[in-house]
Image (cartoon, rainbow, N blue to C red; front, side, top):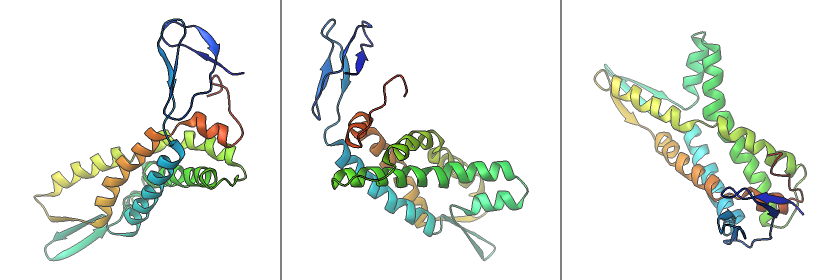
Length: 204
């Protein structure tokens, strides 16, 4: 039986089985040990599917259009990393690509790979390794930082050129809260039990 510690009084007890939407209460101090999200797989899977659609739109359509002296230049989400690479700023280009394109794609793809089979009651091979890798990708997903940088650049260039936001910008802006909501609804404990392996809290 796995053990769980109370964050309020430091008591240790056997971890109880808690249904979805329920909470575990410490018998010593009455503090909340942990809570279980209600329908965590269903909500997280739905939000991840929405995030996948928004991610495809954000990468397939123009991000911004700059019109200066009759010339129109359209940019995409990946063109910034390409431009930095062409300028010789290889480390920055790799960092931008990894944090704004690669890490979100891996996070969304791995969540779909793990959660969809759970929803349809069909085990997926290597689901344990895939779900562990989700936790590795999550800190590297820094789309909100990239979006703030875009807004700062737009403000500085507003006096020099006409800037038209593209469909990808709106999709990218929606992708951030949708993916964050999916992460908030995700209860890793329930997912670990569903895929047949529950690592100890000390390992995580």
